[in-house]
Image (cartoon, rainbow over all chains, first blue to last red; front, side, top):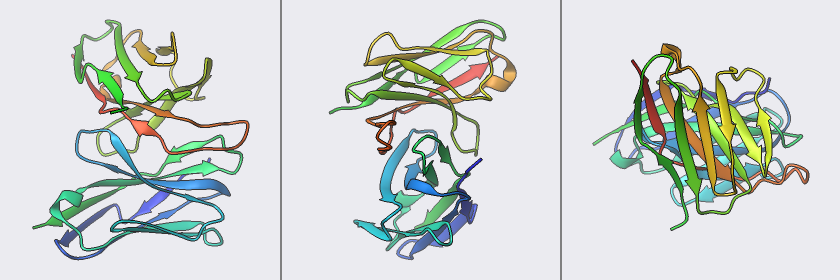
Length: 111
Length: 117
């Protein structure tokens, strides 16, 4: 079954640095979504990128999508302590049916 | 503000004692999802309602059932909770159009943490 796989599993950086997380998947997709989850809370949607898009921006977030490599990256620029959370990618398959989360990257931003 | 609400936030039940978790939404979304999330793992989809149509994931145990009496409310029933069912249960909604292959972002509630004693 299709599944997003995140890399790295855990990332620790200093405040002000950039954080990059990667997501790989196995089959053709309709879209790919990134979510953030603070400890013990629900998930918050960050960005949705469709299969015909290559890059999207939202504030300090930049998402890229390379369908030839079946991979996506999430870049958080000028990170803050409040960015500390788990970040999940989720893929929707090309039939628009299966919606699957990757295992997530746990980001720690140290003040 | 439009939102997804889950009650209770924390639920303790005894082994084998039925428990119901509830979810409500003010977004008027047609699709509602239930996920199970165990510590340090990704959310795992249990089932979803597309309007009134119930869709069960293949590996969701029979112990888990769901009801959606109207657009706004959805319930997760665990008939005989085991220790392995202790987890965070997340409800989510979306305005997906499956036939039109239009899939959108999901809006999550804060979750209900279930403890089984």
